[in-house]
Image (cartoon, rainbow, N blue to C red; front, side, top):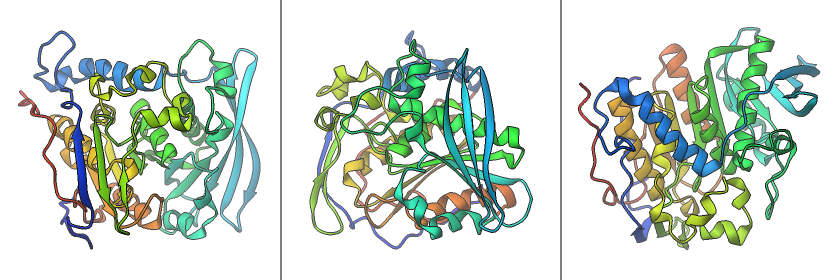
Length: 390
């Protein structure tokens, strides 16, 4: 990537940190289970498999496989609106599920880079400026409704068509939603309508958690963009924080105990519940999940006043994951952007992702402001460093 100039329209005093509680140090992603240190780049895949067991299977449960069969039904092709819709039908044996995929296309008939987003159920899909932010820049926006794969109910239980299809796996709702991202890539390949060398995953909040997990699972995603994904996404389990936001309100970050209060344990795998109130004992944190995306491009977009999403924890795990990116000689492929405002997925967030896609496709400059923080830097909660790559 091109060198970026760190500029932004806020300073480090925008958000006042009132509490910064660290439950334990971030575990070392370079330390093998047997206690030896990773030393060479060629060893990474072995260590990566160990990280997978923790950041994926412990956090989200064992994941469902690719379907045994899949077919696509064309529902509507609207050339005037540049919008096509399809139904994806996939399954195993004689059982299947289906969900809708909508494709918003740029003008023309080229194969365009594509952003896959599972938030067809979310309100910003009804904002034309959100869609146009992609299509006006030559990028296809591919939306699917993750709630057709597993319902988004709070309080809820682990249920839905995908769970009924793969009863022998322990994946939670986020894992089910992540599965949908990969099926959309499958569908784009079958339809032959996208540039398969530049596929990005994106999503907001719980959809951002699913996008990040999907990116860790599927290396066909060249770019992964969780937006405001917080706990179980880009945040940090072992940091609890309080801060005064832009409006002067004092707020706190989400904790594992909130999963019980809001009835969302079903988002995760069955092992996570035991760490409620003792997150400091977790053998992983979200820098492990981010490391599973490396060396591919990870673009985290966050808002300054989204205290619930643990903005310090997001920065801490991004800094820790950068050590892995540095080890893999891809440090510039991890970017963290903050903007003013609250918990939304805005055009300003989209512009950051679009700039990265355009940089990859045609060398345009990447958006400025990566790693410019709206709060004063806190101490890093780890002491290990990237091993010297021999």
